[in-house]
Length: 124
Length: 497
Image (cartoon, rainbow over all chains, first blue to last red; front, side, top):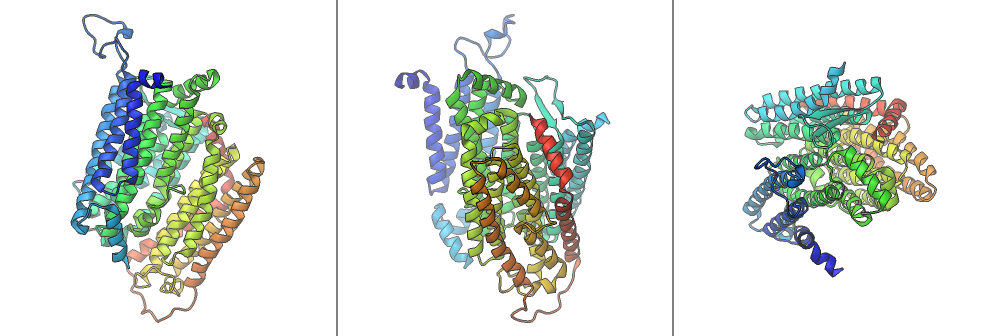
């Protein structure tokens, strides 16, 4: 078991990171930390993709020096997916941060429980 | 005729383009462009529906110049076209009904933003329906989430922003799970397009080489999309979100956004993972159980609400439960019932949100039971429309809700292990539905506590009237002429295989 985990170290690490990010996003009260959790979660997925996309001994998928054999290069799609994913997570992070700023200006707190508490009181 | 094959792509790109153009337009022009765009969507998707019914088969549209296992594709069959048409009709009616409130609820300089978000939402919904590529689906899931979040927070008060951030956190957890399941699937199959991925999955199942990863993929994919569509117990954001957004946004969010994810899940089940594999994995049973819980608990919470908007929102939790229960039956008949209920709920819930606005307008904007007394007489159209919507949700014959319940019950008989629970769940939840919906209908037709002055009818109410009548008509069509639609769903699901 442990030998398997050690052999697939990148995948193991990325799954652990995904778990950390996921629980932080789900359970942490502080909005900024929630956003950090979101980023850890997404980055874990990119690490996983990048680790899976790399095949030991192959080159980056750019034709060089007349080597036309496809088996000399790695698959470029995982790298493309990572880039797309980064764009998505940047925009989502920006949106979350802007929401956080608005909430902080209005309620003077970053604690979601505190904000919801004040919000409930306001509604009554 | 073959030119129609381009229409799915045109409709997606048209919606996006209108969104971009709207960013430099004033509110009223953005409104016109948006209404034009949605009307055009009805025509475009209607033509695709006509074309697929005529030819009797689905078609694939290649995006760019790389053929199948590499490029990106759009696919349209009867079911996709039917969904796209239904969604665009409901989008148009929700917009018509809620448009006057958009201009009062949204800050003057920002009204065009509302329509940009609607344009983006439309394009992402269509892309979710039509896409044949898993990663494209992920990207549009995120666009959908961002647009929906914008619609929630566009009413710039504390409620909107808190609701938006809670929605966002839940949605992002769902997207995260969807993304990791997608990368795992890509890892074990090596494909992102749906057909090659399914062949690879079939191979994996046959050889049994990656059983555990495949189970993880099925589980994460189902749970991720279930979280995003608000299946019990992940429903905590629903009442706040639907209860406080501007009416058009509530109608769109409850009837379309969550349904887009459910449709994607059904598509992935059939077209990537293989229906038999998913049934065999036992994930269906999980969805079935949570669907049942959602049906009951959503209704119980709705009964306890005194605010009618939150009541209608909690009823969405129950209806999403119905859909997942249908999926969870794990049979073709259950899936047909679930897809039909997607349409039923979309048509009915938006009718309820929009017609309820007509009732609030004549009750000084109050939304609790007591203030709404007699509002059915003060605004007769809205009262009638709300009554029709409520009866449809309860399952009154002739209306769409009845057909859904009938389909669910018939489907239940075919799966012996789940029959008793399904029928019991349907019976209990129908009674619970009747309790809260009929209480409200009786309340709007009972004598008011105090006299209200004669209401000043303005242009806004006229649009609302038209939209309400059309919504009632859609409900009646779904209820009275369900046969061709059910046949279409059956044929469409057959094309998925």
